[in-house]
Length: 349
Image (tube, rainbow, N blue to C red; front, side):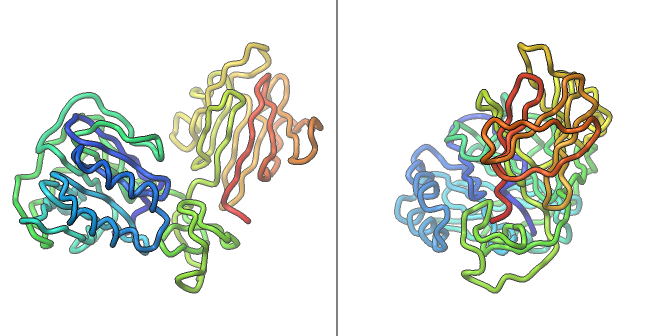
């Protein structure tokens, strides 16, 4: 099963365990006695033999519950031990997987599944409920009873606890159950497909990238770089002057009330709501436009204009014509109303 865990939605609920998500895209759920494995994964996440190290420490330390999602060659795998329970739901299949005895299970979740759209839930408890919490990249370790991840364009539902798959203890083989009724919350919203190259972990990158923008692996070390079509990763971040960051994985509409913009309503752009004590920020002031591997800024006819300062030009600010679009480069700055935004792009050299 092809999957990008770097951009996948992930959430958790309940208690009884620890959840963590690393910058390299590993999603981990473990009982409290597995905290040492989380620290290993955090420290060694970019090393090529990480999975071997994880399996070895899981066999030695034997945490009550351990499960980790990871990708290799863009395919989705799970490592699990103890009383871990893994449930996968796709349009055609429901699977329940559990390691048996004292074995550490390493399993390709795509086996026998014809589509890439799926949600995967890792369990410490058979059923957990309560308030939902997003599991963000490198946001720290949080208390959780389960973690759920949506891959291939699946969208997580708003329910705090889904109906569980019947418990069946399993070895590396999986147990198929009839397909669930279609859910209106499940929809394809996948990333734009672009021409690029994959790192050894299967992350898609700009054709000229020297290091993977998602895991930091040097490109072309373990295999020859071949241009292929794949899902575009986030192209960088915008850093507002108060330290708030916004990922560049979709067009952004910036302003006091950007939620009223037609594209935000349609779901093709994300609102970036700013406050401005200078009262010079328009309701829909500017738009960040993503096209292929390029990022640009467009003034949306704002009352006080959108200004750009190129990297290395200090306080030289050039006004963008109303309605015009201007390409952005790494370390550019934008002045939108009384706010200053730093542009950090990491998809090129």
